[in-house]
Structure formats: structure tokens, C-alpha cells
Image (cartoon, rainbow, N blue to C red; front, side, top):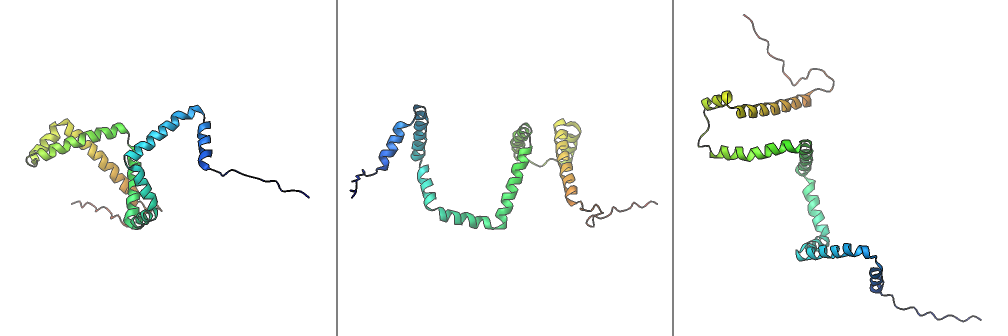
Length: 175
């Protein structure tokens, strides 16, 4: 008859296995590990790890709050509008937007510091002799023209027939 073989296995310690894996790691990963340790230490020093741990612990509560906030129609419209604004800003060349963002604060300063509203004569004088005024007016005019064109395209009927929403132009009476 066969006799059973005695099998004595040492207790498994996962820390020993992890330490062996770390010891066997290639030297080229040492710099990456040290960087990762530095990042973790910085996150710990600033309290970010504690915030993340708290967020993970109360994940269900945070999710409930986020879902309740997103349920309303205003939230959905707000997100859609934000995406449209992001697309619009993405379509503008940075150099063009830079010109606008540099001019806007200067214009606001001048507007706030003006002691009184400009009169009609001042506006006419600027229109006739101030090239910067005319250039700005042309830019605003172009913007309004493009906006109007977009509005017209938005109201065009799908079948190409005359829209019932638009009223016919009044005919001129001749004497």
C-alpha cells in the first residue's frame, strides 16, 4: 500500500512576493518609480489624496448629487450650449480672437471713464473722420450681416415654398 507524502508548504506572504518583484524590476524603471513616488508625495502633501479618498468613500452620494443636478432641462441646455460655445471658439483662429480679447478690456476702460454719453455730433464726427471708428463699425456690420444670414437660413422652410411666417413687403404706392 502507498503511503501519503507529507507536504509542508510555507505560509504565503504577499509582501514577500511584491518585494521580490520590486527587487527584480529592471534598472530603467527606477527613475519612473522615483518620479511616481514624488508625485504621490506631492499629492499627499497638498491633501489631494485625502480628497480623492473622501470622494471614493462617498461616491454614491456624489453620484446622486450629480444626477439630480443633471436631471433638469436647464442643465441639459447648459451643457449643450457649452458644447456649442466650445465649437465656436474652436472655429476662431487664435490670432483673430487675440485681437478681440486685447481690444475689449481697453474699450471697457474707456467706456467706464467717459464722463457722459457722446452726443450726436460726436458720433457723426467720429463716423466721418475717425478711421478706427469706421473700421469697428464695419466689423460690427459684418457680424450683424452674418448673424442675419444665419437667422434667414434657420427660418427657411424645408419644402422651399414661401414661408407663412414672413410677411410680404408692402407695395409702394405711386401717385
